[in-house]
Image 1: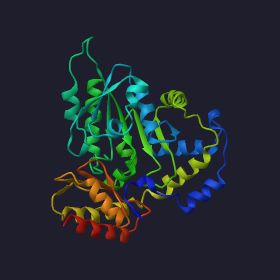
Image 2 (image 1 turned 120 degrees about the horizontal axis):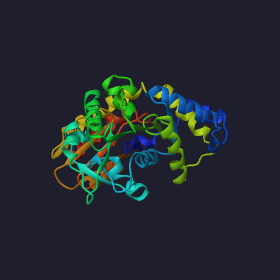
Image 3 (image 1 turned 45 degrees about the vertical axis):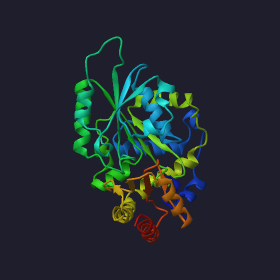
Image 4 (image 1 turned 90 degrees about the horizontal axis):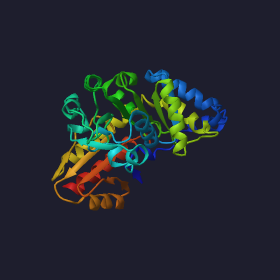
Length: 337
């Protein structure tokens, strides 16, 4: 099968498997796993923060960040299609007692004007805005990329309003490659940042939360609260180190493959394709046929994701080749003709 459902389906590379087998480990609850410690220090230096915390998943990283940056009864300003709204089971409400205030933004890219428009007079009988969450790249925005200029404008608007800001950077690496900038250029000014290792970078599990040293120590307690106390998890962190050291430059290949798929989709009838900047292709159909098209593709050995009745998503990654994507593009062309 050619699996284009997500870049989460990638397998660890041979180099990762060797690193995992040979990893030096210890008990991370005591802070004694040397490989986790090395990964955290490497990531903090790479992205320009004082400290980092390894977590099993990006969702846990977002949940911990929201808990650290908000107080119960507050609201979070976020684009309505964001991961923290759509795919985290209302965790912000369950764990932190906060709710989202959603706005629609082109390509999912929240802008400074959205922040300024959301800020209003406080009153004891209504929830106050406490946090802004960005997502870069934006999953359901078609892998859209928030530029340095856009990001810094949002940061400035948050500082003017006395708001904190978190970046869901699960695919930050793709954004950096698409823009041709260092990843830390897209994280400057953030209170917290979450980055994933288990998507296009091929690690089998893991994410990192980055912030000040004091906030990361508090985050370690919140991670424990949600069951994230880790023992000899250096075997997973070892793969994360390989991911950061080796896998980022090759992401451009995934972006090129996504462009092939987007071209085939755009040539079909009754379909609109979001502009493709990275490795995600999102297509909206004029009629509710996404599950049927996904089933027809599966019959041809191609896996895609029907996100709802009218939305198809395809994600390119390390484990699908250019030939795989050309075959998938040909099949899409036939189905949508």
